[in-house]
Length: 371
Ligand SMILES: CC(C)(COP(=O)(O)OP(=O)(O)OC[C@H]1O[C@@H](n2cnc3c(N)ncnc32)[C@H](O)[C@@H]1OP(=O)(O)O)[C@@H](O)C(=O)NCCC(=O)NCCS
Image (cartoon, rainbow, N blue to C red; front, side):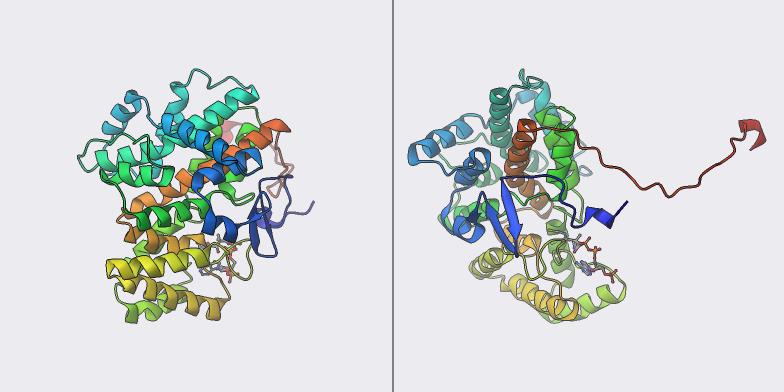
């Protein structure tokens, strides 16, 4: 039985949602570079869920449906207020709140395709409201209700800060959402598919996926990149800091990728945004430091920067708390999880691989009082 560690290189399913071929990422066959430059995040959600780009009127009504479904049950807001806010990581709060959403959805266990699509829309619409409500509550501020006339990216920033965002902020945030939306069979997407392949419900699938995204080897890397940059503090210290980490056999967060050999195609867009935004905020040091680290790790270890590396300084420049970076990843990636969940349901078979047993064998059972 072949057993590549971490299932590396194993093709576990067929999918028509996104592909990574020769270091090129596409959503439904559209190059990520074109989508990042031209699309709204709502257009991407529509594309992933329908495998076609929307017409203008389809997009308008889809945007409206999303905006109409953003409010979350008051019970969930009250629950968020009940946490010990100093110790709870926002990813744990979001994971719990998404699971709770299922309790307030009468269709939670209705498994018809139309019902699953309606749940997908509700979930996608409500996650930004949950993340921003938690972010405000823990600062002692009241959650801000979504504005019906704002797009998805703008609404997130509005609900987070309580004031209308400026165009460059919306543009950068929208692009970040587009770039994080889907990524073939990454760990959290695989988790979602494994979960719903048992014919469990949409909310369970997304809750499981959030749990997988939380880890530092997956979505949790972006927060740790900013922690690293803050620890380094000064551009001139960057290389010495990295050398020490490598000497201690520590991984550098935001660098390396299981699938890409010559670079993550999303990173260049985020690098450019990081450059622009850090110039505007007068904190180019974060960008400069990141470039130094990237150049060093690439030349010393042959590892490219991944999507998390420059998203850290982008979100920081947008004035977002560092521990919200991974929940923001979830706000975007839920679109991909839901697309994969719908695809899994459409052609389902239980996902149940085998393990190669390497433990002891032929053991003689000893009664408990003789051990
Ligand atoms: C993304 C990641 C998990 C993929 O890793 P993988 O395919 O499982 O590869 P491994 O972790 O087995 O690493 C292979 C080798 O490269 C090294 N390596 C991989 N990523 C590294 C990093 N970020 N910094 C330093 N060394 C790294 C490993 O130490 C290992 O070296 P060794 O063979 O001498 O032990 C890995 O690159 C990583 O941990 N990166 C940092 C976390 C991160 O940014 N995650 C977000 C991914 S989008």
